[in-house]
Image (cartoon, rainbow, N blue to C red; front, top):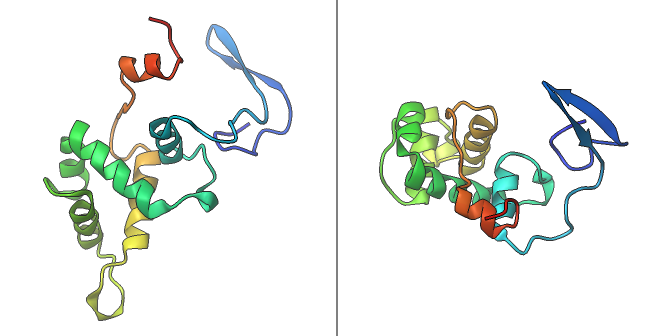
Length: 141
């Protein structure tokens, strides 16, 4: 059982308090018509990182966090406003991710940001609104 595609090998029941969940393999759709949903699944690691453009994922995550949870970025990285690229640069500077010659190591900064998000180091964050869930057909009106 795992939260990444390709981990679960067979059907299994998992007890969660007073109810049970069935974990099954192969539940990821081959493509997503809703790219917002696809990105959000990528943020949490439910899509294989090897097939993703991590720079694009990191910039989109920063954009959503800046719009909805700017205080989380201030608390973790001591950064405030800016474009997603400026925010990523600030993350790199704050963490000291530099290459030879003083250039910023964007790749390392992207991985650190996404890792922090996945490990909950940015605090409790919910990017899906009830409206998003309705539009995706995940809950009924």
